[in-house]
Image 1 (tube, one colour):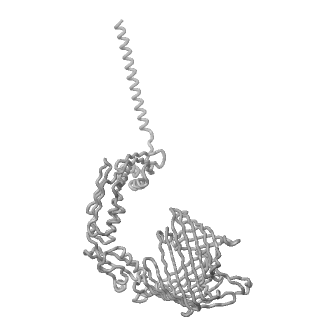
Image 2 (spheres, one colour; image 1 turned 120 degrees about the vertical axis):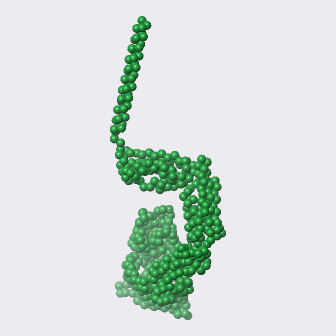
Image 3 (cartoon, one colour; image 1 turned 90 degrees about the vertical axis):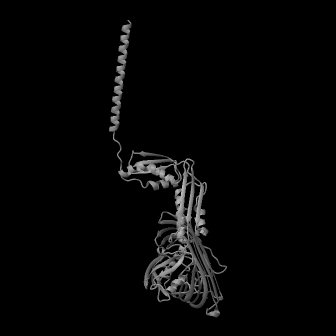
Length: 610
């Protein structure tokens, strides 16, 4: 019985083990088949392109990572290289910004074309400076320019480590040294020590300026420029401390003369011998004569055509001339200017100017003959002038013809400041002020005093908006009781593209009536003949549509009037401006809202606000 039981138990165990083994073999076989099926399944091929995105970091970090990674790869080999190096390069980009223990994950979505790589970053805490030492040695130790850079650019204790800013500090010190004549300056020690575990960094920078060079001999081709003229133009004296901006100033002075086609002013570093560095002035003579033809259009003066002839250097003393013929249906003129350089040839000039001009002032047609002697001085962007001019003017009012002669002494001051693009500045101010007067005892038909001023300012507001404002004012006093004796060119008028839009060019001013100028006018006709006062203002808001177009809304107001007779004329409108290489081409539509039933007027003009 026991033997039989043992045999049955043994048979049962044998059968159980055999089934278990069989199941294991089947499972292994199935796993192999599954693995084979997985291996044989189609794997997405490299599509040849990939896009990537970066997540979890600041804008600065993202931009630096992109700088290290470069553009998205476009071919299979580039994709493979990108995927194999992306994590390492991302880490290097973060280390440059002080993050030495970031967590970086790279995931690739291959379900579509192109593939999308997601780089997820947890940057952690940056290393921070626990000690900073920046020293200046040499003659520059007493130069406040270096102290200014250190105070504004050097990192402070507690600041995060930023290798880019450290390198920029060294470059700024080297560039400043070169600009100020420390040509032998060098970084003698530049060390950043790191303790990544403690999130600490220390900086030690020693910059030795050595000695500062002085201006040495000035070398120039004396067949092109007279030595005496060159020395009068120098903004520095030989032996004075070198400064690069003095060379830039000299170049601008030489170019402003108009005598030279090209000008280069550089230190001759190869032949420097402390403490002096020679200066080389390389110039070529300009053409003896130049001619220029111009065309234009505005709704004020309509089509315009001009011809300019310039002779930049007529003789050894540097005299020059400019002759201009300018035609338009409203304002044709001819002008000749003869210029004589004085003590500072680039900034101090005596001008002899003769001019013939026809112009429409309000409803009057005027013809002027003028000769003036003018001295113009320029300093730090401000132009100051003194002048005496003889004016002979003829005009008509209804059936009466008038003429007047004046000998006027005057002065003016103007300045222009702007930042950004020359034809589309982002901020700026332009000012002009003038005063002139004459006396009946000194060659004028009557006593006269005339004041005028204008200010235009502009400023961008954010990235899309820009505001432009303008104010203009003037006053005139004469000894005559007859208003008709006032020459139109000395009176004030308002209206037009650059005055009060919505009103015609110079259509606003004092009015007179009673009589006929032509047979088809009634005795009730009234003519605009100008006023003795002027006050106008403008405010315009512009919005950039893109890099080439902007839209505008504006309001202009004011009047040209006699004392005590101000009438506020208001024009409002909209416009669209195309920013061309020569200035804004402005298409504007304005309505004189202060006039009952006033009609819309189109204004077209081109040029920058200044």
